[in-house]
Length: 67
Image 1 (cartoon, one colour):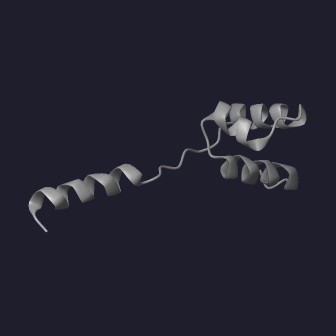
Image 2 (tube, helix red, strand yellow):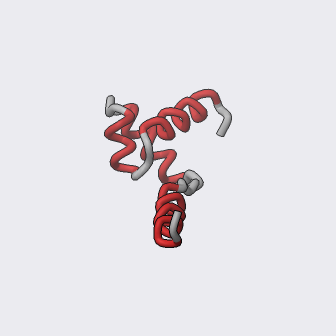
Image 3 (cartoon, helix red, strand yellow):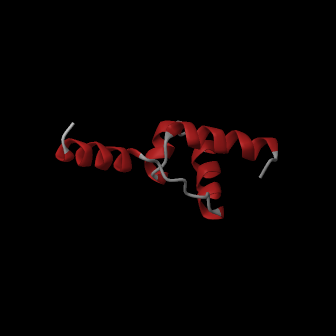
């Protein structure tokens, strides 16, 4: 593999890394408010700029009292 291909692969890998953002109290409140109004997780995720699975997991943690 040439240097150009290696650089491109490395850039692709760096761009695909996910970064974790801690949930804020405001996001937790918004999540509960939107979910209690009947909104689906995927729509809440769009509003909070998060993935639907992370929104659902956070919601379940809140309900269990783990937060």
